[in-house]
Every structure is written in C-alpha cells, then in structure tokens.
Length: 366
Image (cartoon, rainbow, N blue to C red; front, side, top):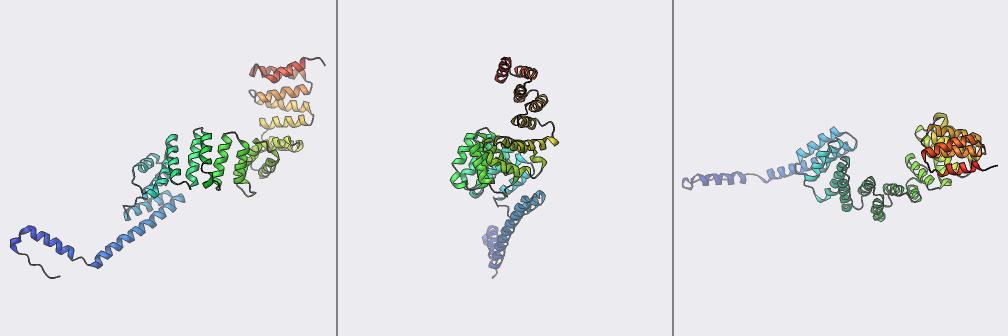
C-alpha cells in the first residue's frame, strides 16, 4: 500500500480517522479467512465437546461431563443449547433449584424448548411441586406429541396427584401416536390398575410382557393383574415361571399362585406352594390362611381350624382371620372355639355378620 500524505491543515481528527482506515485496509483477505475458519473450527469443536459432555453424563460421569461442558462454553459462548445440558448436569448433581432457575431464565431455541420443559418438570417433581411438574410435562408433550417419554411423565404425575381417570384420558388421546411403545402400554396399565379395571390392566401388561423372555418385573405385574382380574388359568403359568427362579424377592408370589391353584381345584399344588413359603416364613399370615383353606378343601376341618387360629392369633386385629377361624371351628364341631372366635369378632366389629350367623347356627339343636 502506498504511503499516505497527511496535510497539517487537516488537523488531528483527520489524522486519526485516516489512520483507522489505513489499519483496517491493511487486513488481507487471507487474514480474514483465517479468522473465520478459526471461528468455524471452534464451533465444530464446541459441538464435539457438547456431545462428549452428554455422553459422559449418560454414562454417569458427572465431573467429566462438567469439564467437557465448560470447554464447550469457552469455545462457543453463544451456544444456547448448552443451557439444557447444564440443567441436566445440575439435576444429576442434586442442584435442583439451580437447574429450575436456569431453565426458566435461559434463552432457548425452539428446538430445545420441549426438553427444557421436560427437565423443568423433573425439577419440580423432585421439589414435590406436583402441579407445576404436571404443567411442564404437558407443555413438553404438547410440543412433541411423538415423544412417549413426555406423555408418560405427564400421566405419572396425574397418577401421583390421584387423578387416575385424568391420566387415563390423557393417554387415550395419544394412543394412535404412541400406543405401539412398551412405555406407553406400561403407563396405560398403571392407569387401569389405579382405576380398578384389572382386566384392562392385564391386557395392557400382556402387550408389554407377554413374551417368555420379558423382564421378570414386567411379568410379575402381568401375573398380578391377571390374578386380580380372576384370570387364574392364565396367571398360573406366569406365576409358576416366576417362583421357579427360587429368588427370595418373589417368594411372596407363592400366595397369589396358591390362590389361583386353589380356585381351579388344584388343592394339593396350592398346599405345596404355601408350605414352601411357610418353611422360611412360619408366621406369614396370608400363607397360613391359605393353608387353612387348603385343609378345609380336603375336608380336614379340625386341622384347618388349628391353622386359622394360629393366623388369627398372629394378627389379632385381622377380621378375615378370625372369621375363618370361627367358620372352620364350626365345621369341625368345636362349639367352644366358635364362641371364642365369634366373641373376638364382635369385639372387633360389633355387628359382624359372620359372627351372628355362626352363633345362630351353633344355637340350633342338632
């Protein structure tokens, strides 16, 4: 560039202006290209760092994720989507209030708003601010109607609020888009359970856990729904497959299995299940009551009365136990025990119908 001649009469202001023009004009196209390329490279690196932070967070490495996020922010301070990732980190670190404040104040692109609303719902859920959590989850679900996670979260909060009917209606409206997913069917099953519609619950669990290789927890939910729906024939093989694992966590399932076996007339098999349970838990009252019923089904009323009396003694406030003890004592012809247990029943429930019937029957001659 040729040198500039500065005339003295232009004064100091003119000199300053021309100096600025001269300096800016001396930047070569190559320098500008290098600067722009560097900015683009930082943007790419920031994107990679953000992805690494997300991967580390998904793997449970919170500190490593925080380090990658800090580097992403340094490389590209203007990235708006990093606020969502930072909120996830704050939630993972039990900094719920900070996460909520960030999500409510950070400028976000439209693409990030559904996830931000969902994360805000999680924060409000952790704070037990259920109505606010519901509003946030429903906002996320409305923005992304194809995302089952958001819909299920909203339904779960409705269940938490005791609005099972509302939760069910909310899911039914989204059945066409989301009904093919296991998460949706599981949430639907829980809604039916809380509404007391065990047949519908069993149908939904069947769609989730009807395979032989399904998770044991899902098959347990299916089995219990079938049992409560009275579908014992279908519940039995599922329950049998669960207790066959001989896992202490599923021992209690021997009770509904025995109930089902007894209901279909397989008394010996039912008795085997309760006796297996009682070997490790001799004071398990539901198992004792089932054993008493098994004895009664075999017409051994005296033995049944003894077992029922033991259960009623272990659970002195349990009305059905005292009722069974009194009824089997009557069938065994033990009038003294009938009087004892009916007196117990009347102490628990002065107008107990079973006690009244048994006392009237015992008072009749012959």
